[in-house]
Length: 321
Image (cartoon, rainbow, N blue to C red; front, side):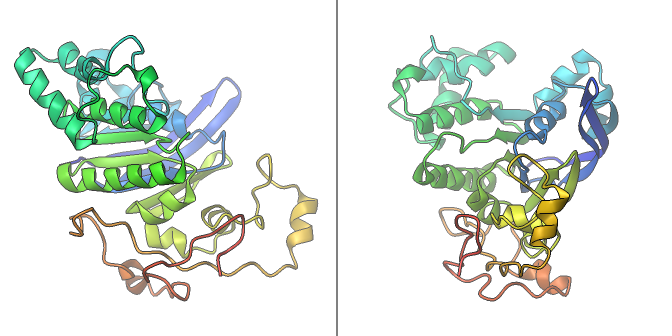
């Protein structure tokens, strides 16, 4: 089962450039969370900070009672064993075949026999659908296969936390859909706490239990999926519904003239909230909420058509009809 990650008052800068300040949120144990934000808002920096590769200027990251930000290197090494990380390009060793790539963490960090290593490696490769590709080199694989191989390697130490850094990067929509289903199935099977950094709005609207949005050097909002998908807060509404109207411009923030020009326009209606993706077997995950539950409990009326099969998703910067 996954573990909770409590982030409090986190601030990070490089020299005079502030990446984000006072970031506070809790990633619930065993749940899937997505982190969104315009390019350059420090999403990948946050992932590196979670595993202790970067030290924040201030704040804390508490995992199982230990503050990652203040641990000595030896203790930090132990905490990192809780994590599995899938990097954008899979980060495979080009000179090793898939089997040896996946086996690498086991050979590096455990004293398991080769027979035990083989059993674990084949189990994880079967989990991600790569049985039969063990002898292939990374250069012989498609982008989707490399992602799955990277995921198999991230899983061999049975992590309680899995971080995905833009897993859909470079993948076509069909492969992205298959990968999303794999993530949901994986959460159901092992119960790990999962954090996905992505720009894919369809992923954000259908996969996670929780959504967070980084914008303009702060965390604009973090909470249950329905909370953000029904939000009328300008930056959240604009980003999650892929709309042009709002404070985000082509670079980052729109200037005063652009915002003034939009002030009299009627905003497109919020699109329906789609049903959350189910595991392949159709069984609701332990941490998955009943559709519409958050809205009912908080007195929020969801957009018309919400929680229906095939509920509309935003397309090309405007709300779907």
